[in-house]
Amino acid sequence: MAISKKIIKFLEEKKIKYEPLEHRTVYTAFDKAATLKVLPSMVVKTLLLKVDRRHVLVMIGADRILDEKKFKKTVNTWLKESGQKPIKSIQFGKENWMKKNLKGIKVGTVPPFGEIWKLVTFVDKSLLRNKKLIVNGGDYNFSIKLSPAQLKKVENLVAGSFSKKKPKKRTRKKKVKRSKTNLKTKKTVKKIKAKRTKRKSTRR
Image 1 (tube, rainbow, N blue to C red):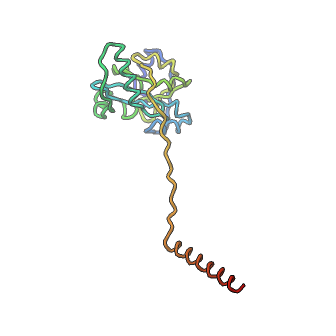
Image 2: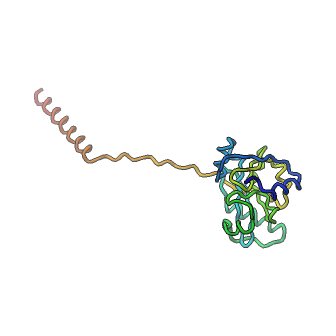
Image 3: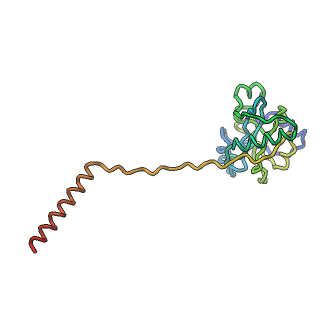
């Protein structure tokens, strides 16, 4: 399955310049970066979130994670500007909702073109610093390459700073366990040395 006709039609109608990319099957944005041999910062993760009762799309880099507090602040600022009530809850969208409402899109490959499904799309500002972006194409074997300038042609696109670096995995130092036998041998060696020194002193 290639990029869906619905997405291609949308891109062409919006006159968005893009490059389709075919690659081996990948299930995460980080694996996609490794497969295409590009920096993870230019590969986009598109999250489907539910904020109170509405669903939205959220774009962050493959090398970053969502900062929920900052995202909530971004959403509420946007709502305030349009005279709407602030949100209280944020949760990930359910797979069943996605299958029902985003037909033809495989789970985990949602493109960031929320306008197609009348969804607001939030983009993390760190992504807009890249010359090129690689976004989902609705399939595990196809992606779309485009510039941030072309992405901005999409309606209902809200920019904000709501991501943070992935925490580094800490490697625990292995504690060397001293066995009882080793301790006993050390004690006996010390005793033998002490006896020898006493003998030498008495001989003198």
